[in-house]
Image (cartoon, rainbow, N blue to C red; front, side, top):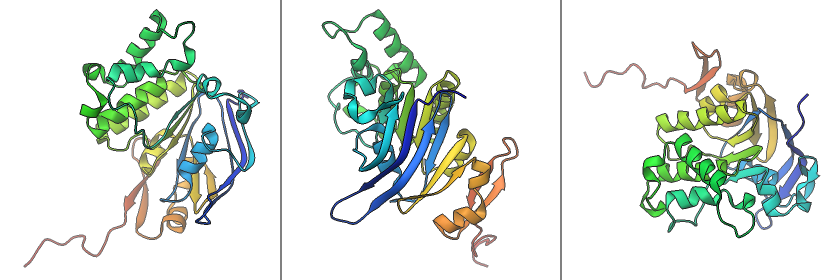
Length: 270
């Protein structure tokens, strides 16, 4: 069995003031894994990812990165192994696309902190991988939401991490670029990177993730293969009524669609 890059064991967190808490949750990431974290709004997906990234200190349980307690590692040490992309990144608006992607090399810089030839080659590859080469000299503040998302993704990939944690990376992207992002994640996983992705899109999780973790109200309700988790019974229990599932004719994976309503079949006023 492959070594564990990231081990999250029974982590828990309670926010002061509102009583919400994440119940103990666990998962392991090995080279080549793509784990999807799904669940309704407010179920704890982002909190769990922050704990896994060491951004939030776990109040219980442990997070180990390459068998080391993440709490004992400096952020620069963490960044050499773990790449984390949150839902929102507020800074960097005054920088160009190329400068932002180059920031992903910070953890690897030595000496005077200047980018070497290898660093620039990595930046160029990441620009190409995310289809943003034509944007390289534009400032982030001049880009659309979808373009910004691809720039930030390129920056975190430029870290060359062993494990990548992404919180809703396809937000604001059209369907073409949503598919492209997940294609990129598959490419990275095939090269040995571990990937954990939070997504609201159950169909993207079904097609691209080998395992899914389903959260509800701060607790892990189900974990396993998409075909075992994305069933009508489980989804209705977590999301409520109004969903149907069917089998994709090519992938054989489940597809989640809205249930037909009483309006279906109407042809307008007679």
